[in-house]
Length: 477
Ligand code: MN
Image 1 (cartoon, protein in one colour):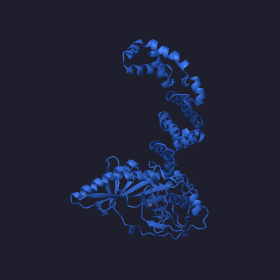
Image 2 (cartoon, rainbow, N blue to C red; image 1 turned 30 degrees about the vertical axis):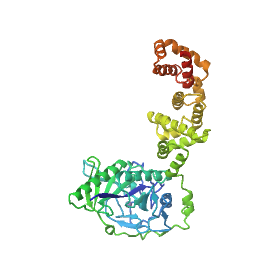
Image 3 (cartoon, rainbow, N blue to C red; image 1 turned 90 degrees about the horizontal axis):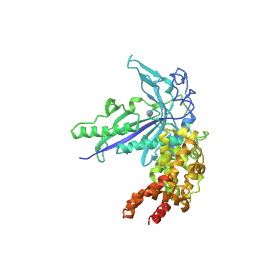
Image 4 (cartoon, protein in one colour; image 1 turned 135 degrees about the horizontal axis):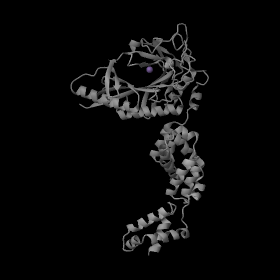
């Protein structure tokens, strides 16, 4: 009996708004002083009333449009009732019957819905005193929840979907979605059953990196498969992920939605989108920027290799730089554009990594101006400098700035392709390598390669290797 895993994901992401979901308290995930961004509304003082944050609604609708989901005109908020110290009202305002977005898909994964709700406070357990401290800065922060259909069948596909979704909401500016900071949180529903069957699903929580998403799913697939194979029964439950032990562990028997006693929030009006400024279909759709998939397609249609295209999509700061280089340069064909891409994706990226320049540093005081970078590539294409010389010039541009033409002239890196200039070099090589010259004359072909190397060394890579080779052969005969 072959068992097939089925996975569905639930992804929560904190939205980037100025204020919280239902009040005017600041929404600032960088605030370190506990209980500063709070007010009577998000602290659930009696008699306070919530007000819907239009910016948060707009974010969710834009994400919905990006995944081509159906944007609801009519929605309402519901109370999801449960008790926990991080939930001051005793219920979470969420959407149950009428989510803002229904359907849609992202890179082949079908999406069930996206709804809007509020985040809870964050609790900190102090192991010394055994006390739990609650910080309400996060209570009431707008939270978007995306639910996929159970259509994923491997840990890798699940991890990739989460990565793809993170990128989309970052492109949209809806969320910073840093998993380490808890701005994006993934839960996975996993079941294992014979093909065509669903089995019993287990929910795994506390996954705060893509790696732990993948590891936890792999672990659950293995655990459930072994359990079923040995005649056991999978219990429907919520499990946590123990990062240190790389294992899931039972937390509680899963509650059904009936346990939450959902009911429509009586203190909020029903939300009818028609007529609300900024929320019309057109206003939402026209605000969607180029998304990762479209950006990737744009690069591959230019003939750029998929590795480079993938880098520019995942790291838009370097992608933006590449776009500016292409706009500034006169690159006549795909080969020229790919050459430019090689120097951006490989050489410039290496310089950035080695100098540990962060993307903001790179963007804010970029010493390498795209126009000058484009000139550098044009000089290679015009054979004014060699590829080796180009790398040296780029390193200098990166460290000190300056134009590639000036640097090439100053450092003697202009490609020497004119025979007279190279003639004395050839004479020098022959004079100082007599043994190798004799070997070459005796029929050892590799000797030529060595002599050529000496010439490149003498000219710091500035010799045109083809011209140098010709001259050498001519003078050796
Ligand atoms: Mn939720």
